[in-house]
Structures are given as C-alpha cells and as structure tokens.
Length: 285
Image (tube, rainbow, N blue to C red; front, side, top):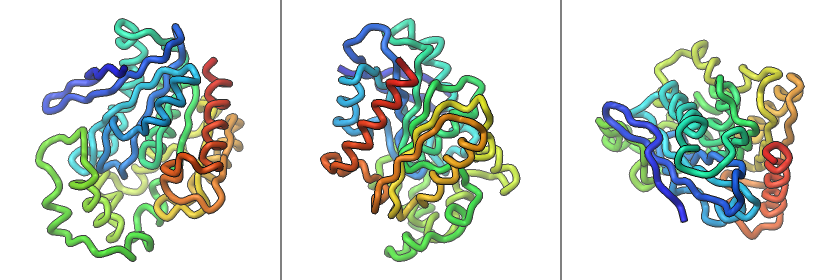
C-alpha cells in the first residue's frame, strides 16, 4: 500500500512522491525518477511489475515527481532531485521505516540522466541505475534536429507553444506534453527549452564531466537500437567512470530500443532486471 507525501513546497508549487514499503524492517530504499524528456511524466509512471520486483527483493520504493520543463529550467529541476534525497535523509525517517544510509537512485531516459546527475550532488546515493540515460547534453544528438523525430509528422511551433503553461508544472500527461518534446527534437530546440545556459555553462550539468573517485557505483542499461538517446551515451559514461576508477557495469540490450523495459516478459529484459537486483543488493545490503 503506497503512501503519497509532499517532499517539497515552493511559492507556486508542491512536489509529491509515493512511498511503497517492503515487508523488511530498516530495508534500503530506491528513489525512482520517471522519464519524459524533462517535459512530461509523473511518479505514477513507474510500472507495477517493477515496483513489485523491488519490493519482493527487499527494497522500499520512493517514486518522485519533479518540476518539468520548459516552465522550469534544468538547474531548478536538479535541486528538486537533491531535495528529495535530503527529505529521505532528514524527514522521511520520522514517518517511514527504512535505512537512510542505504539509498539508490534509479531512473529511465531523462530520469536516467537525473539519476546520473545525483552522483554529482553533495549528498550522494549509495548506488545509481540508469536505464537509457545520458551523461552529456552538449552533443549534437541533443542540440541538433533528431533524425528519428524528423521522420514523424511535423509539430507546428504554434501548437508546441500553446501547450506550455504559465504555471509551474510537476505532473505532465504525455497526451498534452509530448508534442512540446517532439517539436523541440525536430527543430534542435530541446536544450534551449530546458535551459537558458550556453554550451560552456551546460558542462556543469553533464554528469560525464563531473565523475571523480567519489562518484557512486553505477549500473547502465541501454539498447543498441535506441532511436531517442544514442547507445553511445551509456558507453561514454561507462568509459568515464572506469577511467576515474568508479565501479560500474554496462548492460547492453542487443537491438533494444528506447524504453526496452516496456517488453516486461522479454528474456533479455528479465535478465537485465536480475542484474539490477544483484547490483542493488551488492551495494545496499
């Protein structure tokens, strides 16, 4: 039975999270960060099968919302993730039973990116799992028109602009928000939508540039046929971690596409999650 809490309150917003308890006392906790190109999604996006898998393996789950772009820019989104970890460290233990010294961050796509970014925080998790995330947002894949999205029906700028709210958004239905992302990727505008920074400033928001010996052990999972986030993003991140002497593992899904884990019953997906559970068990138990 999940419990919904508010972990952060601002002048024009409040941000919620769902806590799913495992039956084991003082168990580790997994912070789950949803994807959605930083434009859409919510804490509800975590698949039931994945929640159950983690709970049965002896992990609590904390699935979070965060402010979304383009209404909120990346530096503030980053603080939301950091504040979720701080809440678990200081406040959540007053309400729930878990081990605040045993926290992992797991995310997919944009959530995988934010999970990798958490390894650069002052208050770091003990382990990170990134599903088809990215460590570098300064490359052509992010800043130029996407060949994959260019093949799709063009989204008019007027429509994309119309879908942007004049309020802070912390939950974004894909039906209403996906067109903003499509337009941005079709026109090479994605980075401009999520940040007001120039390329040099963006380097500080690229996890691949901030890897050092204190970076947490990291598990990367990525499909070789990912049409949205290039497989090379996880390869490069793994190489940077290895160079810094950080324990890491890259699980390659042959011919896997973006969000490959939607195919829950696929043998490769099942094997990948076995590896995730082993990895988390090693670093959180």
